[in-house]
Length: 84
Image: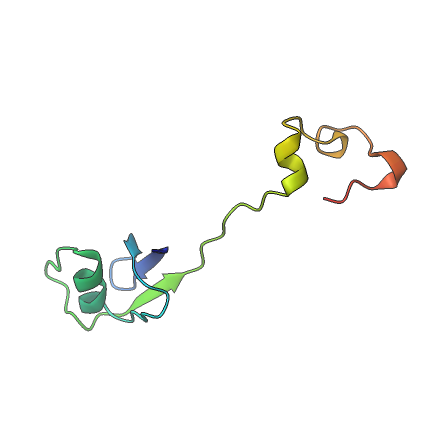
């Protein structure tokens, strides 16, 4: 199940919650129920914002060669480009 980061707009705190992609969480009450969080003193209708989380992208060619390509270590790439 995917993990998402949400920011509580009232407190500015960020929470990590796992849920199905089809679920749309828009407020603190929904986030607490889904993520098994303590609601505390915040009203359940307090807005939350789903944050963009980026994952690292690894090219399959990099997996065969643990060394960084020359262009990433200050050298030049053969033929003028390395495809990164």
